[in-house]
Length: 207
Image 1 (tube, rainbow, N blue to C red):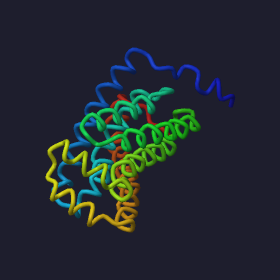
Image 2 (cartoon, helix red, strand yellow):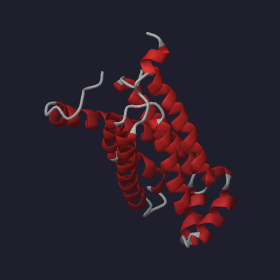
Image 3 (spheres, helix red, strand yellow):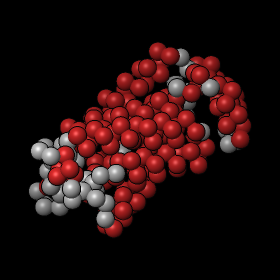
Image 4 (cartoon, helix red, strand yellow):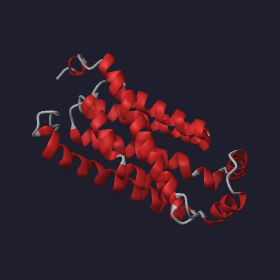
């Protein structure tokens, strides 16, 4: 199949931008709630994105079902990354989310925006990038994050304990868990959609 034909008719329209905006806001609210819950201790904080990737997966997959168009993943990544940055997460998270969203966009494009498998892989890449941008800097940019914590009125003692506790193997485990939870979240979302929304004719099932 010609790639141009595969992507023709997939340009974002007015309704797509509305759906993109609505579901991005919902995703961010759900995702940040998970981050806050897991930020209560230094031991659970590195798993914030993992929890968020599971709980918010249904919102993301619904967004993709409503707006399976070229550029939607990148726009989502830009909005998501900007909100995280404005909320004080630092520029590494913004860069990581945008880069991973570009990769995710290329992945879903390879499936002509109709492949469930490509959507899942793209989501895993996006969540993995979010986790990398969120936590790896704690290992390599410690002074920068201590300064950010001070500027955001975050407990300095807590941040110091976190940076002291964080290790490469622990973060590697957290990143692996993030991929697993992203897969589980999208799998659960598909089952729910198939049982309720697809049968009701509200969504088309992707293969």
